[in-house]
Amino acid sequence: MSPRRSYDQYCSAARALDLVGDRWTLLIVRELLAGPRRYTDLHADLPGVSTDVLASRLKDMERDGIATRRRLPPPGAAYVYELSERGRALLPVLQALGKWGEGELGELRPTDAVRAHWSALPLLRALEGEGIVEVLLEEGEFHLRLGAGDGPAYGDGPAPGPVDARLVLDSATCTAVCRGELTPADAVRAGRITVTGDGALAEALREGTGGREAGPGGT
Image 1 (cartoon, rainbow, N blue to C red):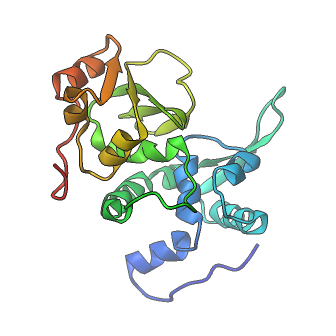
Image 2 (cartoon, one colour):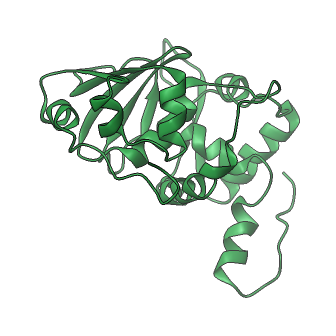
């Protein structure tokens, strides 16, 4: 395990960056906000990270109390990594960073990797209420846990149980919402998001009250 590097500054921002400022650390947190993940799953959903760097970052996160490692009971019998309570507290940090970076998305570059669940955090910012929302994109499916509290913020694939609303949208619409250019309510009204479900959350989305307003650069 590598020794922790420090900015040696008596400043809370500098102390925070001592822990999560290394390359890849916050993106590992983004993946673990979905709940426990195996090392191989993390490596698959972090294209570009080397096995050595990923292993080193995970060890650092364990040492610093951001993540833990545990063995699943049989028949799984695999090790998984998951965020500690302190690690889960980084959700608003990731949300604020994502909001700040909306204008940097631009057009999809030929070298850009894409995973459907990378849209989970932007959609969590855009939606209001509490409940389970399934989202189906061309690239895949994931589910959101609005108002989840201490649990995972989202999950890859279909929800394991009942859902309150199901959203079907294309990549262009999802990108516009993630950039803050389009609200979910406006997308529903324009027929760009199809909402199904009988829950209060689905009804709110159909009525145009289930999302936040677009930012200053949006429409």
